[in-house]
Length: 178
Ligand SMILES: CC(C)(COP(=O)(O)OP(=O)(O)OC[C@H]1O[C@@H](n2cnc3c(N)ncnc32)[C@H](O)[C@@H]1OP(=O)(O)O)[C@@H](O)C(=O)NCCC(=O)NCCS
Image (cartoon, rainbow, N blue to C red; front, side, top):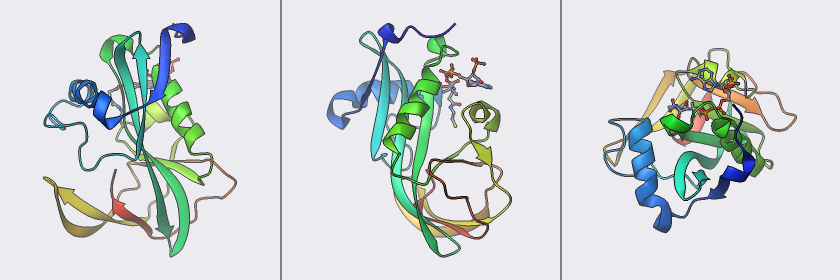
């Protein structure tokens, strides 16, 4: 079943007005991760929210960042904690949220995300990368504690938003792993 576009509205989030509803949605979709707040490691720069009437039914967080690949800077958006409330799934809301985030990232070279469910994102054009080392800032319990290097290509998914190709080499996230 496809969604009736007249029944879903998308808009960007306001930290002040939407925080309580977001915390509820995120805790429902990712039990045990959010500890009664609306972000896990860090607050995204922007969010797109989906509403069915007055009810929040989905969200996607967006980080705007420059990352470095083998020493060359690339502008990316990071897609964060995409989720849709269980009763509203498989109606096209997740796809609409990803498309809205990509539209906000038209000035970027790539959209990237981390997920251990690559099959969800395949239909939306996201693909895993060949193995490459990666470096990022580790945050735990509201504390920056280390710069970590590791191999995360099995969970890193990428979609080009422009014409550049993702090059081989060390990926430095220049910040936390969203
Ligand atoms: C992942 C999630 C956001 C998808 O939202 P959704 O509104 O159900 O997605 P859509 O209806 O737009 O799906 C569009 C297409 O994406 C793919 N897709 C969506 N969910 C999928 C799943 N669980 N497994 C495989 N493919 C999936 C399908 O190709 C689907 O098309 P179809 O319904 O015609 O088969 C939702 O299932 C969710 O909130 N899951 C829990 C949180 C989560 O795991 N988020 C991802 C974190 S990385």
